[in-house]
Image (cartoon, rainbow, N blue to C red; front, side, top):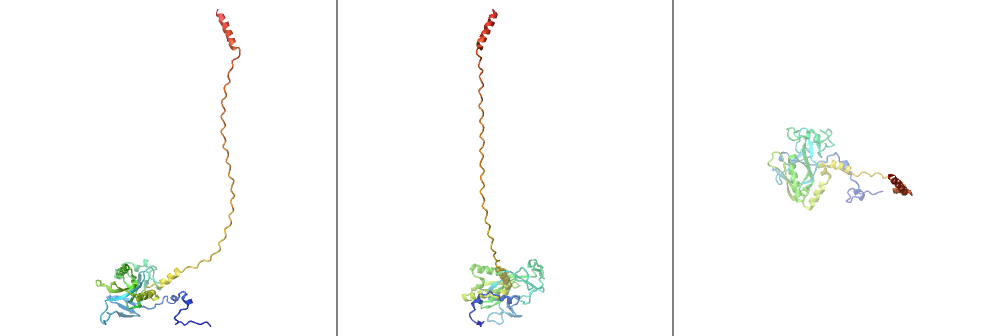
Length: 309
């Protein structure tokens, strides 16, 4: 009988390590449950399983934290869209009436999407909001964050439209130092000049080697992919990028030997006719005087001369 390797074994069998991962087939469309960081009322609140816990200042039980130190683990490169018929409540765990994680088309889980494409959706148009300003379907960037001292507990932070510029400036600051954003401890606080929650991102310090490696590992986890809304997109992309099986190659027919072309005899050049020589003019025959003609004339002259006498 074949011996089975216990699941708790420290060493994973080689034939299983080489197997293609299929575990995502069991998780598609099922929420794994993760905390959401709400910024409603310019207060940091952690919402999980319907419970809301306000973040308090370290060492203080009666003073609300005005800032928190976190690590931005990973962000969705696409702006997400979210629409609630009754309006969105910051930090709400309720499922929206329509949403998109790639900003292009509604999520497949939406049974009755407002529009087939976000670009043509009337709720995505400016001045479609209930107050006449902005859009009824709001834009946001989904970012997975963790407390700097507890990296293994990632949470969702939806960065609202008013804070997107500040987030981009934070990325630019990291770029100038040549540092990935998930290698930096970031201080999150609210802009005091704004009445509505507007986040300010400030770099504080670099993670040490051990914690940075931990941050990278968590950033690549399936849970973080779900938090930022890229689990389904990654699944579809992987299927699209998988190489198609190569068609069976049929033996190519051997080309028939080409018949050798016989050299055609070259046409002999006909000798050009030589011009006929022009006939030389024949000399006119000389008229020979008849013998005795001079004597006859002399005789006539003698006779005539004799008649004048």
